[in-house]
Image (cartoon, rainbow, N blue to C red; front, side, top):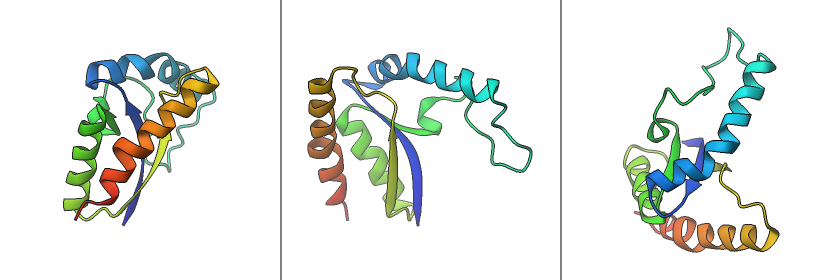
Length: 112
């Protein structure tokens, strides 16, 4: 079974929220402005009323791997990510994606 989750990686959970906050505020405002929530849909995340832990994989790389391990234990074997915390600069983006590959995706891929 698979799922799609937002991925926010930083030094810890507090830093993850700070890293993604500006982008998420813009995204939530856009979704509300465009009235993207339809009555026949699963509820969209449109504000910060719900804790990040309830709808994202977030925190340090270790936090993220632990979250993915818990998901694996519950039967989830595939996860697609939307990344809400990409740095603006190209080199920083490359480094960030490399860190995710090495410190989150690779260790999570070896989970039993």
